[in-house]
Amino acid sequence: MLAYLLRQARSSLIAATLASVVAGVCSVLLVTQINAALTAPDQAARAALAWRFAAIAVAAALAHTISAVLFERLSIQAHARLRRFIADKTIAASFRQLEEIGGPRVHSALSEHSASVASFFVNIPVILVNAIIVLGGLAYLAWLSWPVFLVAVGVIGLGSLGYHLAHLKAIRHLDVAAREQDHLFGHFRSLVDGAKELRLHAAKRARFGDEVLGASIDVVRRERERGMSVFLAASGWGSFLIYAFIGLVLFSLVGDAPDSARVMTGFALIFIYLMAPLEGLLLSLPRANLARVSARRIEEITRALTAAEEAPAAGAAPRFERLALRGVAHRYFHEGMDDLFTLGPVDLSFAPGELVFLVGGNGSGKTTLAKLLVGLYAPEHGEILLDGAPVDDRDRYRQSFSAIFSDFHLFDRLLDAASADLDQRGNRLLERLHLHHKVRVRDGAFTTRALSQGQRKRLALVVAYLEDRPFLVFDEWAADQDPLFKDVFYRELLPALKAQGKTVLVISHDDRYFDLADRLIRMESGQVTAVEQRAAEAAVGREAAIPQ
Ligand SMILES: Nc1ncnc2c1ncn2[C@@H]1O[C@H](COP(=O)(O)OP(=O)(O)OP(=O)(O)O)[C@@H](O)[C@H]1O
Image (cartoon, rainbow, N blue to C red; front, side):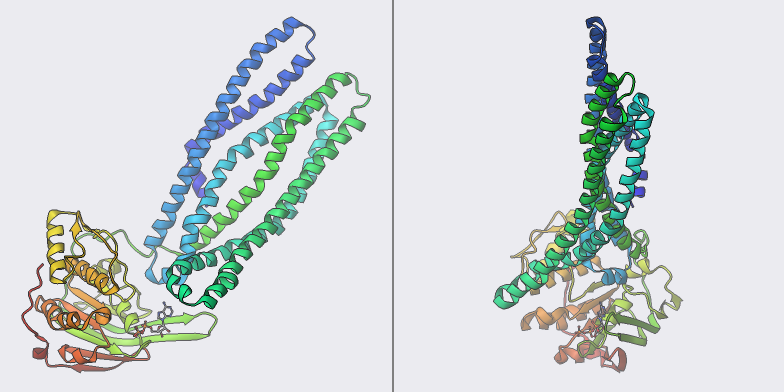
């Protein structure tokens, strides 16, 4: 993931890196000039050094600013790119994959994990500039004294080993924290979605706050604390090694060296100058590791979202004379329960202008069958035939359906190309559905969605009408409607759709309207148990004029 982002931003990254290198090199050059000035033989030599010092200082400041700005921009761009990447993967994933992964993990990837990865880019210049200063300082040390340089390399080796061992331990804690964070996002959602239930039950609210949400927040905090503490302890080990190195050099290595005054001043300066970059380097490495853990989580999540969806299908929705399910089956595994729900194999067929009711007890598989029918699930066995031909482009096939499931989502925009005609047709339908005093369609969007559940379902119906697809599926649509409108739905709207030649599948528990169906399909435990042909004439209700 990090590699992908680095590749995407290659040219900006090269420019920012060059600026960082220049800033780092200038910083090291500055210290060499300071040392030269301190040990300069006379005023004239110092004056010549002053100009050079000033030029290097300006270059250092400029390069620092350019690199900081470029890396900040890179971080912002990386954040946006990552969000786009995750969102694209989510859009392209199959519906079933999304159901399995769940919203909280996707939200967690889109928000915290992507922010953490983006912060890595702001960290790069800190790591880079400090690393260059440290390397430059070491080179200067080597120039001053070879033995001291070799000791420094030994110390760095020891430091790296400690860091590596710490890394192995710390990363485990950070991984646990990252996984728990995905659950935490689910609890955040319950905090808002379950607001009513939590307020109506004080004991439940307290338990949710302490034992569920609080516990999860604590796990993330504890594991991150542990992981970062181990990293910071490794940084402490690094600092200790630096002090040990300074002591070793000052008190035993250069004591009697020739030219020792110049060498000692050089060392003193270098050590003072290198302390801050070294500590900065050691402290920014843990943050980079945190970003790596987040990048891994994003990778895991997006890898599970394999692209199943094609680019939006071009052209009109396919029309059909006969749509048939042949031996279609689907299974749900219930993890941790060794439980399996099997739907099918199901054989059914549908024709235009047919009003079909799908009925059965709760959990009998009606919604699952509807999801298979509209192409949200790919059949594990069997096939779907459109006019005798197997469906090969599932996305195109799905464009034949409008469906309102019981957990439908209402977008604030109609997401059709906005036009005066769309607004007009929408507003006419709102009048038919007795909603015009509450909401209007303006510029292709509803003026409000703050409506009752039954009213929102009527809005969803407006959307379905506007889509004008050949096959409509209503999953217990009328359950939230008042008796008057329920009657309008079953006796006027459905027959009107049928009269327009639409195929309509209605999932319903309203048995007093069952006689309106052309065909009644009964389900039980995932199996179609009966298909009852009804008198078609009975289904043609009162005159129904639904505007289009
Ligand atoms: N997303 C899911 N993941 C796993 N199992 C599921 C999922 N949705 C449904 N199931 C399982 O499939 C069975 C059938 O569910 P389905 O929603 O199709 O029933 P239904 O007949 O529409 O019920 P209802 O009348 O209550 O809406 C359920 O008993 C449940 O065990």
